[in-house]
Length: 217
Image 1 (cartoon, rainbow, N blue to C red):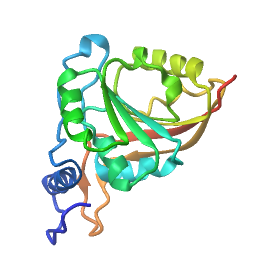
Image 2 (cartoon, helix red, strand yellow; image 1 turned 45 degrees about the vertical axis):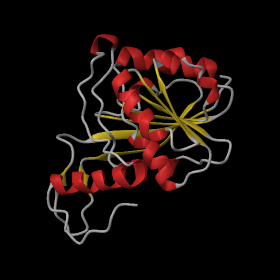
Image 3 (cartoon, helix red, strand yellow; image 1 turned 60 degrees about the horizontal axis):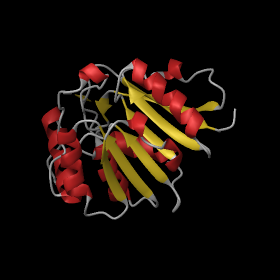
Image 4 (cartoon, rainbow, N blue to C red; image 1 turned 180 degrees about the vertical axis):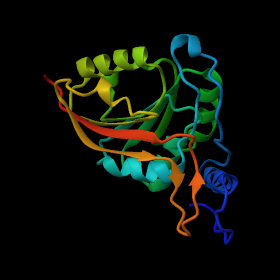
């Protein structure tokens, strides 16, 4: 958990400082970004760690058990993986990251946790049947997303939950596809400050959608 502090959260800098404290308590290092992608020519987007308060909400939609295996697609420095171990979820979590520099950063701290793994590579090249759950925070452009959806539909051998967060949630890419059911959706923009002070985290709302997929359609 984060180090206790009596300082009120009044600014975005205060929120980022709290995020950094949690990083340090879990990983022993900062996972801060964003990082400009060196692979935009391959469809990759900039790497931006998901804030912990958002991960608290998003991960409440998973039903992890000891057989679960989450894949964080485009994991960057591994913030979602850090949340996984911080929350004490059962099962395993793997991150895959195209950028070798970011993958190496995540690998350095994650190797201390036996239920975490970080792969350097392209998600289109891995066996997606190994995973029971997926997390995507706007990792790549629409063309790659379409390929990923088609690939996971073909390879999935069991029902899975997928959470997708981005500027628009990319909902339209999933709607109407056989086997996909929307479970929940929402938006994030501001830090939920108990004092009622508005702390803007994003320049525009980030939308998320939670999907359940049944294979065999």
